[in-house]
Length: 212
Image (cartoon, rainbow, N blue to C red; front, side, top):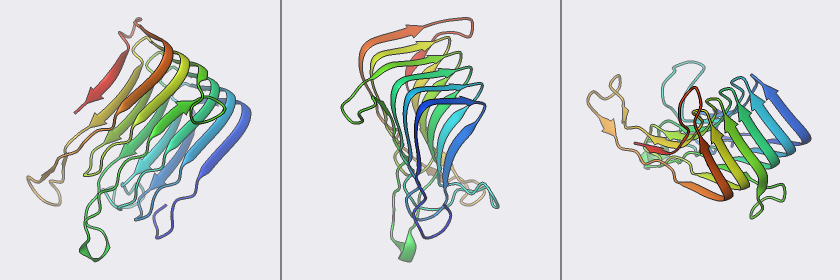
C-alpha cells in the first residue's frame, strides 16, 4: 500500500501451512493503515529463513527513505502447532511517522504479532516451537510505538539461540535533518503459556526480552 486507500488484508485458512524460504508480506508506505495478515492452520511450519512480515513506513521501491503515516498491519496466527526452524521469523517492523496532512501531527504505531489457538482470541495453541536462530520480533525505528507480541500456548519452547524480542531504536535522519534524533518506544511482550522452555544449543542461549 502506497496510496490513499488502506492496505489489502492477507487471509490464509488451511489445514497444513509449510513455508521453506518463502515470504508472506505486507508493505505500507501510505497514509492509511497497512493490511493485516491472518493465518488459520492446524499445523504451520516455517523453515530456512521463511518469514511472515509486516513493514510500515518505508519506501522500498524508489527513495528508500521513511515515508507515510499509516499504522502497521497486524499479524495473527490461529494455530494448533507452530514450528519456526533454521532462521525462520515472524516480524512486524515500523520505521517512522511524522507530519500528517495539513500539518497535523500523527503518530502511527507498528502492527502487533499474536500467536494463539485455532478458536482465536482466548484460545491456546498446543505447541509453539522456535529453534536454530528463529525469532518473533516487533521493531520500531520511528516516532510511533512498536507493536506488541502476544503468545498464548500450552507449551512454548525456544531452542538454540531463538528469540522473542521487541526492539526500539532512536531514528537519526541525518540526511534530512542533521543531528535530529527521534526517541521511540518499543512494544510489550505478553506470554500466556502453560510450559515455557528456554534451551541453549551450538548457536547459543535462547532469550525473551527487549532492546532499546
